[in-house]
Length: 423
Ligand code: HEC
Ligand code: HEC
Image (cartoon, rainbow, N blue to C red; front, side, top):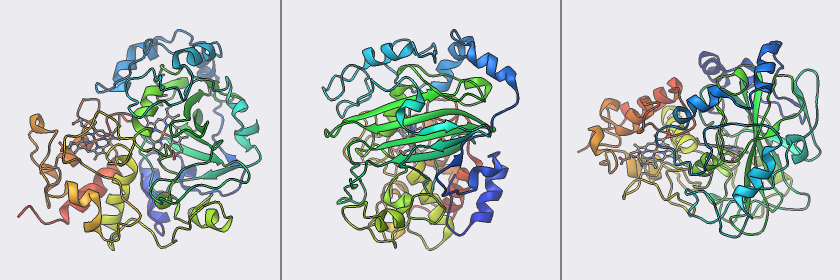
């Protein structure tokens, strides 16, 4: 969901309407944060803990991945959260940085995927999980949140970052930050009120492809630690929630589209006052090599337009962009580019405006939608139509969601209706 500054009340209302936990919009800058309230339902616990051969997961796997998934690893249909998976995960991924990616989706080289610690606690995120479900963060770990969120079917999320001491983020290109070696980013998913998954992105070396993706499964609502998932596996309806844990190749499809790998930890996404580590704090603490103006923002005088562009930036721009790291599977030229850049001062400057509004489609012929956005009418716009699709090949985003996002659709609809039709 998107979260325009100064519209907290409206955002909260939206959050409740869309079934998010009320805490979803509380921005707690404190270092010790609630990462989920343990459920009292212990049946979930036992179900989850004994699912070595989880038939639910196996049966539904193809659905959750979506028909467009390009998961290339073997064994994508079984799930296994036990620590015995560690050896396999490491072995199948090979050594990082050697160009020997085992997945078909990484056109940019290698993502270091192996060697992630077996347990989340070993990654340096937290020191203990308190009885109330709170994760007591380890020293140097800070919470942050992007201004515009990726819609994940209503899950609440918590995000954290660790920047190694005495390092700086290379911000010489404000649109593509280069994170220092040793940087770790985590994202937790809270489904209902249950902490169910925590993801990790780590910069492991100097090479531009030296990143590791890993994810950890909180098998029980009251677990004190989470277990590494096998890289090629996904798990549907994890721990009895509606949340699906993606496979490593799915991380790559969304995160390798930008060389910086971090998608929400960026200049435009952090320039806000919602709490947590933000652009102003990063500047104050001297953590950026090149200063970035606090005036930057998603363009548009009208909040309708800002919301729409921010939504597309966050939910679509990680794939729909033309920066290095573009995945091979893409839209035929002229590409559809939906990522906003720091220098985009006017709406008309944005790639989204230039490549979408009143522009013909190049990948939607069989859908009967000749226009990406047909000004004034969302029902003639492929972009809107694809956002209404789920569990079918042409849905957008193609992975990571099974439920349409009403607020996102409303934002895009309002923007399209404000635009003039093609000449
Ligand atoms: C559907 C696309 C998609 C998939 C699949 C996906 N991510 Fe992300 N991820 C995003 C986007 C977009 C953001 C930033 C927006 C947000 O957090 O709401 C993000 C944020 C994150 C963050 C916080 C740091 C950042 O980039 O802002 C981490 C850590 C992360 N993802 C790890 C992973 C891992 C590990 C996997 C696979 C297990 C994965 N993600 C799968 C799209 C995806
Ligand atoms: C994981 C990467 C990924 C994400 C995220 C993503 N897309 Fe796409 N998109 C693609 C790919 C690949 C294609 C081309 C294949 C196809 O047509 O399905 C495409 C095609 C499209 C097209 C057809 C363009 C044309 O000219 O025919 C539209 C419209 C579109 N996407 C809109 C969106 C919107 C809106 C979002 C966000 C709500 C989004 N996409 C998120 C990968 C992505």
